[in-house]
Image 1 (spheres, helix red, strand yellow):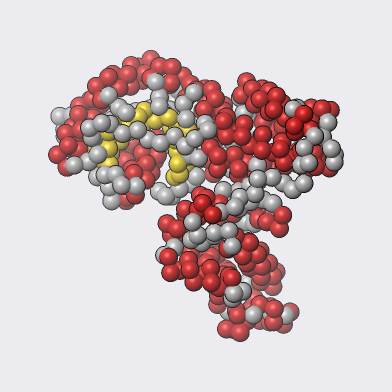
Image 2: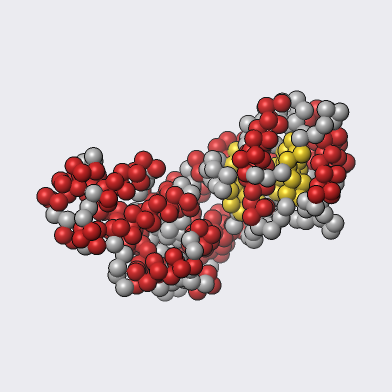
Length: 450
């Protein structure tokens, strides 16, 4: 996510540091490179232009050019402007004065509406709400069946309607009645889509809006379609008045143009992002955290929240003790890798770490599910002494371990390298609050060095 843009921006800041002293000339060159990086990331050209003008106005000031650490000032200005572009603050879901709150889920066919409806229902149920889902897509039985299967898998309620309810409005009214009778406080209405925007679709959605009086109209967009997603969101907003956007397939979008443009173009906030296929691969959108990730500062707050959801308090405290006392063994590494599966895609987790100093190469670590299986086999093939002291694993031991685990010596070497990286990474953040400290004590890097 945002890898290409992040790499290019970090290169710009590195070049600025190399100048020693900032001048109007090298700042102009840097701004030109930042603008090019944004355009190559598929950011809307008007948004890129406005962003550069805002950064230039602040970065060309005498206070910045004569500062002791001018590059850090520039990084902070870029970060602040990027947060503004992304929406400044997290946009929370609205609720009705009297439940149930109705959320209409809208978008083009294939954007991920139905999957996002299920993911949002799961998120709501995990955060103190009791949602019920209903599909009003009367044209595609497969779409209604898909939502029904999702509801069953998630063990969440769905209103499937009666044979007499053949129109979208009738199904929605039936779902509202069911919600009131069963004490559900949110109704998620998965609407019909089309391959492209047409008058018939907009008329149906407008009528639904008038009858349901939803507190949220969430437009679902596919991040992989870039500026097409932004354009569609803008058109839906002009016709329907959307209140927010759910951006799907963010994990597969290395550019990030849609995420960076959608707020500025539509005026409506990104509220959630889909970052994988699993039901829990769904996150609230935090503009400040995303800006920090783009600038290589990581997203430790989100990582800690994931850890706290997955690990028990005693597990966190025991692991922290081992890290502080330098007792984090290969056996612990194996157990942690098993646990990491629960946090989501491992590349996404590593992407939340600051890409600075000794951790700058972590995002390049590629670990998939098959590698975890091999990792467990390799560690299981070690003796207890080897697991507790990796320094004794010489060439002969590596050959024996490889043979015993059905892997190669190179794979054993890679595991030991990953273990060393993870040990360094986790130890770096133990003192700052990793694995269970209060979030407010976490110290995030605000620059890239002097």
